[in-house]
Length: 147
Image (cartoon, rainbow, N blue to C red):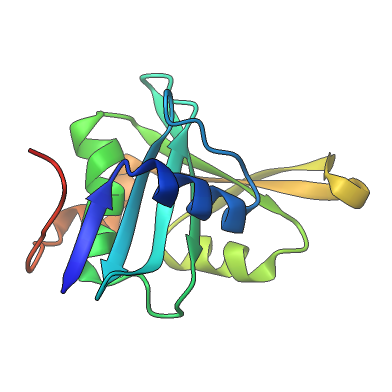
C-alpha cells in the first residue's frame, strides 16, 4: 500500500535528520510517502511567513517521489497555504540536493558563505508559484491520515 502521511512527528524528525535540519512538530509540517509500511522519503516545511515557506526534502529510496507525492509537495504550500514562493537552503557541497531542486524548478537566489559546518557555503534556492509546473498534476490516488 502506498500512503502519503501528513504531520507524523516521527516522520518529521526522520526526514529532518536525513536532510540535515531539525523538526519541531509544534510549528513545522511534514509530509512523508510510505510504501508497504516503509518510509520512502518526504519533505519538512519550516518558517512559514504567509508570503513564503522553507522546504527540506530527503529520501531513503531513489524513487521516493512519485506523481502523487509531487502533487502534495507543491499543492500544500502553494494552494492550501497560499504562499508565493518556497525557499530551500542547500549546502554548497550537496550537489545531489541542488540537482534535485533545479530539476523540480527551483532557481539559485544567492550564495552565503560559512553557513554550514566546516565553513561550507549555503546556496539559497527559490521556487516561485508561477514557475511550479506540478500544480497542474492530477493525483492518481491519495491515502492520508488527514480527516
